[in-house]
Amino acid sequence: MKWEAFYAKFSACSIITPQMVYACGGHDTSLQVQMSRWVKSGKLIKLARERYVFSALYQKDTFSEVYIANHLVYPSYVSLEYALSFFGLIPEAVYSVTSVTSLRPIKYQTKAGNFTYRHLKKEMFWGYESQSEGMKEAMIACPEKAILDTFYFWRGEISQARVDEMRFQNLDQINVDKLLQFTEKTKNSKLSKIIHHFLLPLIHEEKKAA
Image (cartoon, rainbow, N blue to C red; front, side):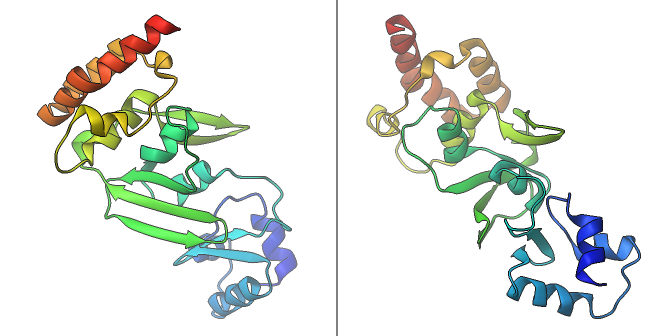
């Protein structure tokens, strides 16, 4: 398939796979070789095995890192440190898009960004919502679930000092009833302890000061 025909068919796609090209009649056996050449020439960026995006020069639409993260590994949703930063719950900028998936954990370092996926058991795979980008939807944990997902992966001693080290801010935006409902839904004693004994006092303190 020639570049012009390829671009005309797939320029509006966020992520392109060889299978998509085959489904549209691109049965050229040299397709993988051709796509590799387009990567080398700067027309495409390879994200992962059989996952490509158009380089900035050729993109018709701008796709956020959240949207790309959703489609790079499916099923997944953005959570953990990136989501906490996205909602302004921690002051630090996070430069790797952190997600959870029911599949195996994996990391991708690409020219389009760095993407980290941690395995979350299916019973915990909920609590995300849609962030609209024009006609496209990107899935990200709601603030309450992003907090729980973060604490879920904590290992070792849990203390107030360790929670304080997170430097949580803007906690007045947290829906306490929703947070407690989510905590109960996890049926996780560690999460219940962290939320009730260490985080809720911080939330109540900030809400009083607001």
